[in-house]
Figure 1 (cartoon, helix red, strand yellow):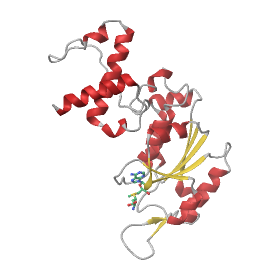
Figure 2 (cartoon, rainbow, N blue to C red):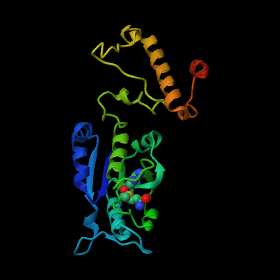
Figure 3 (cartoon, rainbow, N blue to C red):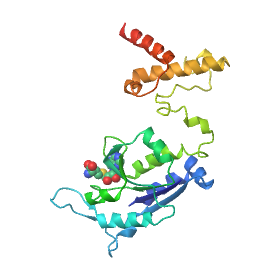
Figure 4 (cartoon, rainbow, N blue to C red):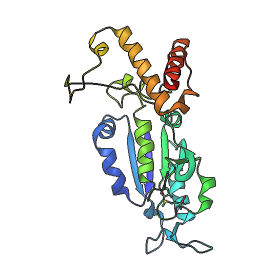
Length: 245
Ligand SMILES: C[S@@+](CC[C@H](N)C(=O)[O-])C[C@H]1O[C@@H](n2cnc3c(N)ncnc32)[C@H](O)[C@@H]1O
């Protein structure tokens, strides 16, 4: 996967892509990062990318012609971007489902705003707008890195253990079950006996029930979208009765 990121602060983005799993995956050739300075497309002697908004008001707006030149540059790359993504609080809410869809692509190009964001005439030039949540960040860099983190780990070869993302929260439609490791005892809290039993069937059942239980108490909205077996439904019915008594 090739990720092209246009930002006014490339040095905020680059270090993140050079360390840990992303850095190792890039060295191994599974990922490629192309972090570009939007200012390189300013084309004026002050390298200015922003102007005050028509109609007045606080803050500055990033010029559409500057962003359009960046988009044209990205489109001429090989492979051409499958998606040109504008990071924006007004975008579609990012989710594991969108991450799964994007992880199948070959090249994602992302545009990070700053100040009051981009001139609205950029919208027809992008293929989608993504928001990482109902809050306003100072810039799109963390949003772009969120999309990179969530998609890269789904690409074969990026995580050491390919199975490890398949049980994650949201991948199964449920929150993940709780995990434990050494020490055996911490401040009076032990390890559930079943996890030490070596009985794979019982461990799998315990984990499924804990995932259902966590989701039931913390994110009941997720249960409406997930496909559940009769055993799951019976377990949830018992939980519901318990919660009501
Ligand atoms: C200060 S924000 C602009 C906010 C804009 N005036 C608004 O209220 O929608 C600057 C940039 O940060 C990025 N950004 C801020 N919050 C975001 C979010 N929740 N999701 C994705 N990008 C975000 C966008 O790229 C945006 O152009």
